[in-house]
Image (cartoon, rainbow, N blue to C red; front, side, top):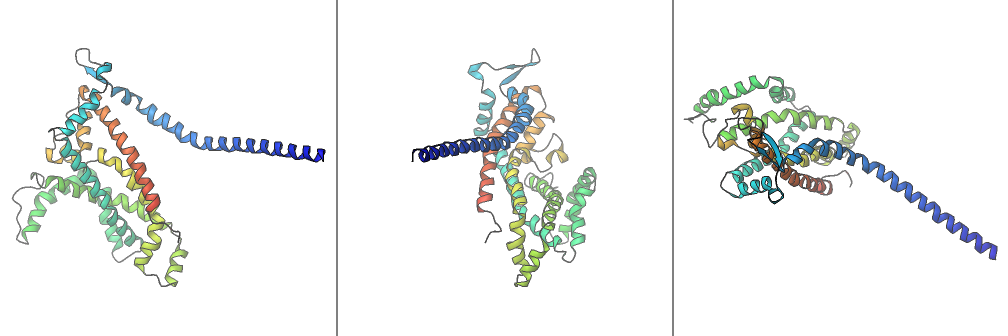
Length: 322
């Protein structure tokens, strides 16, 4: 009896030792997976942006023509400048609203992008010609296409509308009420080609046997789109949705392409404003620390928002489980 009790105790101790060893191996396995993206983040983001991060806490000394760190009592001067301008009358709030509007338009345009891609994927009548029309902005040189778009807007469109009794007294590019919308229209058409390649590529990977099985059960084309196509391509669509958040702070509807560094104030977005501050006509070392600070502010907003939207897409998006 005593020997049996001893054997049981040894087995229990050995089992605990094995479980502890297995737990250590599992923790090491998980760590080996997690450490790789963390290492990439440290090397590529922190390492690549360390100069930018440090610059946000500096100022440019005009006399010495060099950057120096701000004193501790003014260390966040570049950050507070942004919030003061945003809440003041500098037009920063208007730019933010325009940036949100442009992002929202591109977000909503996902719907026609997907529908058009689906029609082309199903090879509806005229799909080939429509594909060529949508690809034209990507095939033709951007300089040539901008000239063509300008000619159409400034000369062709007034003639076309004149046939219906409507007159344009001033160019849409010169009218403060229409210039931003005109640029957005160009950006929408320009973005169709990229969406076409992305979504038709995702749709082409859908197993044809799945579609055939659905049709045998009486499924129509619209049901195919909602019940099969959308759930299977949604991971691709959702990536564009939550990574596009950064576009609020970086994108502009080709404003610099059309106007260079002298765009009218009615077209300013965050993307254009800070681009010309660093690379365009307003380029000066004095603005570099301020631009660096705002980039950190934008990152602090965009990163958690993107993760939140990613979580919502994964939780509430369409799926293939029934």
